[in-house]
Length: 354
Image 1 (cartoon, one colour):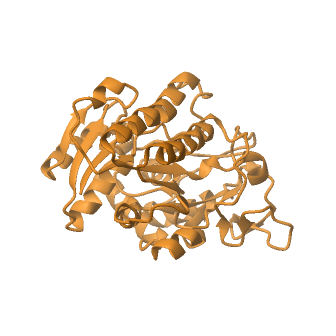
Image 2 (cartoon, helix red, strand yellow):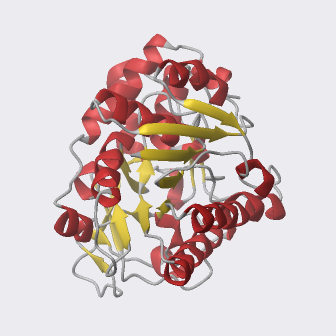
Image 3 (tube, one colour):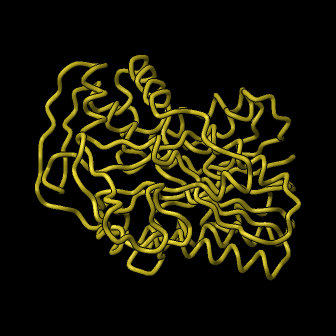
């Protein structure tokens, strides 16, 4: 199968490629990357050695697609992944929309012309901020836990947030850009007859992830702790009880193979894809884990809360498990250990990726 992976030298794109190489997959992979993210250059030689043909290009520029070869599927792993993008002063709102929505439009036009399938790794942040922030939680074992005795909104259960949870705005500019991309992809699929799969992922985590909080809190926390860089618990009492789940891209690669080999013409096209409750952890619990591995490190506490911060977000991927006979194979302990081992081998990684 011939694949085009955008953001190929980013963490998710490069990890998918490495996973398929390690599994003995016969995919022929073409990579596209604009190399603007610190750290992406570090993956260039590795991917070339795996036989990936890399193109320097920007998904915001339609002309950069004109010389790309024919492919069977496009996997869009290029995006600005920060929920604060467009409002934090580091990226303009226009830049965010150009990357995440207009880039998707150019990819869909490419798929329309080439009749290639399209896979959009989306995000849990397409779910509505207000009902997420209002979820009833209780503090227990250094973390927030969902209070199952309280009334829960549609789409929330002990297993987490499922696909029926509200996607009504506000979502954040980032969440809105990804949700708009989802809608656009489904409309293109219906109008022009090529297959589309949308996978709403939890926090992606693993070795080699760039050292920025917006690209993955688990990796950022471990590298920062190991390098004795400043860390803060922000909001929610400054205790670090807020909870997220994590997923390794290797497990995503297994699901993508199933989806790209499916001949199902219709039906459900959107799936939550995550580590779920077993692979969830609070920042305070992650600090305990780091303390056991690297020794003591102080974490500052700030009471103020940022826009779009929420106390508990764990995805329920039961639908993906039922539909595809898929579930994550890598436990959170394995993922954290992999990141920690990488941090030991690369003691200045956070500085490399600045």
